[in-house]
Length: 85
Image (cartoon, rainbow, N blue to C red; front, side, top):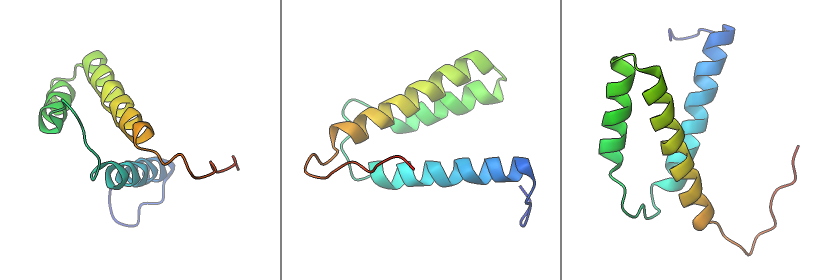
């Protein structure tokens, strides 16, 4: 996206990028047992470049779910959860 792009698509792209950065910063210090993140990313990129949407969506979904599960396993239990907005 070009710098300063404020289109709807630009907002979606930047919003997803921001959300991914938050998850990345939260999960980097955590243990990721039995995961090869480099291989996961390479396989996701290959499916995307091959235009294999079904495989890419499946791999991305699995990748996000595993990140979520890692965060939840390591979540502090001594803090009250935030209330929904």
